[in-house]
Length: 334
Image (cartoon, rainbow, N blue to C red):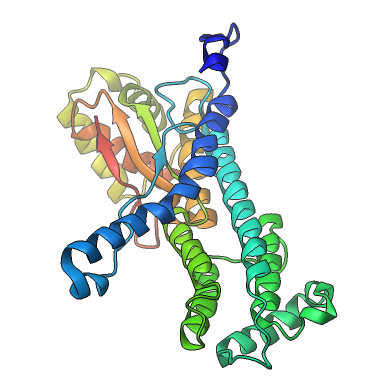
């Protein structure tokens, strides 16, 4: 509290987008990442207390996920653009991978079960053999005295695959489901082989975190003013008096452009290039970080259906569509 009143409430220099992002990420990495497993454990305890044995059988699903507009709100900050969208998700991904890497190391220190003393599922041993062939250096880096501890060995190899994901190197995790499946192998083996009180609690907490944060940490919402889109679409369609058209007439023209896959001119204004770059960035983030990396595309000051159709047309031009031309974007008129 004393530090708080001694700190300048409004620093003289305006915060950059990166500054604001780091402020948000502090709470995600240092507070919420730690708080999520206990949150679910409290819910499970309450259900068991109220409903007894029946409550203990209830599996609590993931009910809390996180999203942010920092780095994606172009309407709120003129310095937000396609570059900040990419950089924001890249930064979030690097932080969550680092947290997973460190947690795997912490769990590994607890799972010292020796294969001579307790059974281990064959699936764990098979996965070790698979990863040993890919990450030979990581396998040989495991101390010889730990080679008979399969959970410890597998977690070290999982760490190496996380590192490859971080570095965009060989054999990365292409989807978070692959990482989760590797951790689930250890959970299943511990449950089968008397491990309930020998590490299962800690690694089950990691599963909760994976389900909550994925490889994206938080979904990024994107927002832009409808007037910007109107200007850009009018320019790209070559309609000089576009802003004077009625909303209904603009909608008809956009639908025609969508249905005929009409293109846009080679020479564009800076504003138009920036607008199209945003949709190209979203398409890139969908491929690299998964479809849940981007949240709703919010259109401020929406006045008609043409403002929503404008986003669809810009997305089509920005290659943000599947083979059937469908745009995987949740458009939210505001």
